[in-house]
Image 1 (cartoon, rainbow, N blue to C red):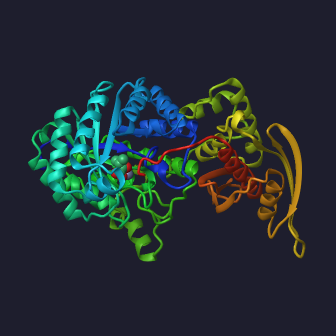
Image 2: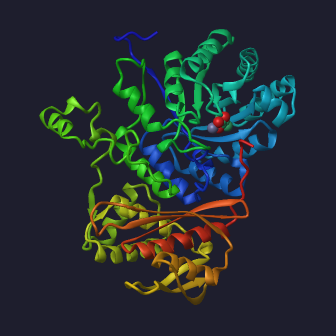
Length: 517
Ligand code: KIV
Ligand code: ZN
C-alpha cells in the first residue's frame, strides 16, 4: 500500500482510440489518419497504443503494421480473438514494433458463452490457454481479456485467469463490456480476483469500461483504488456505443487528486487538447462544449461571480490550469510569407508524414492558397489541410475541380460543379433548398451513389470569421457507414469536399469484422 511518502505506482495508460474508438459508427479511419493519431499518442507518452485488430481486414493489418514500424516510444498492440488465425495475424502485424503486445480475448459471461460462442466453460478455458500459448510464440507481452467480465461469475473468472496466467499472460483485463457495473461493485470484483487468483501478484490488472450508464470513468477510477494498474481508455471517450472511459478524464483525475490516488501516469498532459482536436477532426465526432477537460467551455467562466473570483485568485474556481492540458497552445505557426522549409518543418513537428516530394509540393500549393485567403495559419488549419491531402490519388475517385454557387433572396439556390470521377471530368448542376443542399444534389446527379445522408455538421476550426469551416458528412450504404471531412474558408466548398470525401471512403474497400460480434 502506498503512503503519502512512498513512491507512487505507475498507472499504465492503454489507449484504444484506434481500435475500440474506431468501432464508433462512421469513425473508421484510413491508414494515414491512424498513423497521425498514433504519432500524437506517442508524443503524449501513452504507454500502450492498441493500433487495431489485425485480422479484421487487410487494411487493418497494414495499419497495425505501419504503426508498429513508426512508433518507437510506446508499446504497439493488436487485438486478436482467441483463435489461431487472429493471433498469428496480430503477431505478424506487430513484428516490426520496438515493443509489441498481443491482446487476445474471449467472452466469459454465461450469456455470451451460451448464446454467442456456443461453447462450454471448459472449452472457453481451453481455448483461452491455447491462445495465450500461440501469442507467446510472438511476444512475451501478452494480454488476456475476459470479455463481458462485468457480467461473468466470479468463480469462473478466477478459474480462467489462473489458467491464462500459468500459460504466460502478463496483463489481465477485466472489461465491463456492456457498461453494466457500478463503481463499488466493479472495484469489489477487481479486489476479489486479485485476492483469490494464484499468481495475481505477477501480473498487471487492467480495466476496460464502457460508458452505457455514464460510469466508465468512475468505474475505472474505483478499480484503480482497488489495485488495477492499467486503464484502457480513448481520446474524447470515443468507442463502441456510448464509448469508453475518456483518457483525458482518467489522467487529469489521477493528477489533480494526487492526494487520493496512489498512482501516477507518464502522460504529457499538454498534449491532451491537441490529441482531442486531432481525433475529433479525423473521425468527425465533435467534442461537446461542456465535455470535461477538452470541451470548449471546460475552462470558461460565465457567471460574473466566478469571473471575479478567478481574476482575484484563479484557484477559487479552477482546479486545473488550462495550459496544463494544452489549451492556448494553438500557436500562430505560419503565414503567407512562410517558405517550403518552414512548412515542411512544422508538418514534421506535428508528426504529419509527407511521403513524397509531389505530396509535399501539392500540400504546399494548397497551403499558399489558404494563406492568401486566411492570413494566420494555425496548427489546426494544417491538420485539416493535410487530412484533405492524406487521401491518396488512387482512392480519390471523386474530386472537386471547380464550383459556383448562386443564392439570392427570393431565388432558388443553385450549384454548378465540375468534378473528376475516376479521372474523367464531368459537370453537374442542381437546385436545392439551400446552397449546400444544391451542392449535394449536383454531386448525386453524376455520382448516383444511392447512399443515405445520416449527418451533416459544420465546425469552425479556429476562431474569427476568416476561420476555415470543417464539415463532416456521414453517409450510409449497404450497411456501411462512413464519415467524410472537408475544410475550407468557404463552408459550401467545405461541404462539397466532405461529401466527396465520404463517397471516396464508400468506394474504397474497407470491409471489417466487428470483434464484439
Ligand atoms: O469491451 C470489450 O470487452 C472489449 C474487449 C475486446 C477488450 O473491447
Ligand atoms: Zn470495448
